[in-house]
Length: 104
Image (cartoon, rainbow, N blue to C red; front, side, top):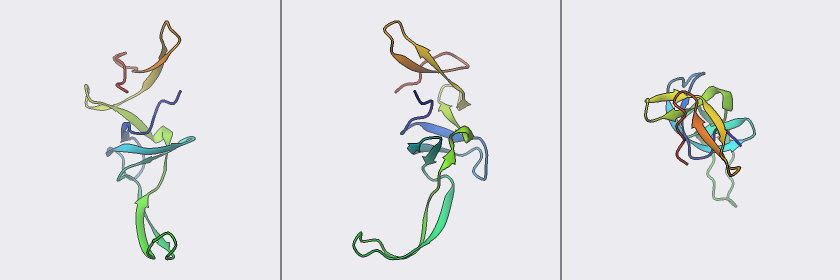
């Protein structure tokens, strides 16, 4: 079970965007793409078949998953995540500081 999932609100803990918050757009292995974080510019060729214009395109680049923490709205900051197994065998993500479940 992943500690960070698509749609989670996260806080960046390292890098040029340290302290900023955003929503996870995608998770691929040990890397995540966060909305409006780690914006890069890429020069792209036009692709008429895909309807894509050429030029300088700004988009989000991926960040290593260790550089983000799940945002806890109760405390207002990023916190670590633990996995708790319930009696019926299901797994639940919980905040390590308070033990309360992550609403998902």
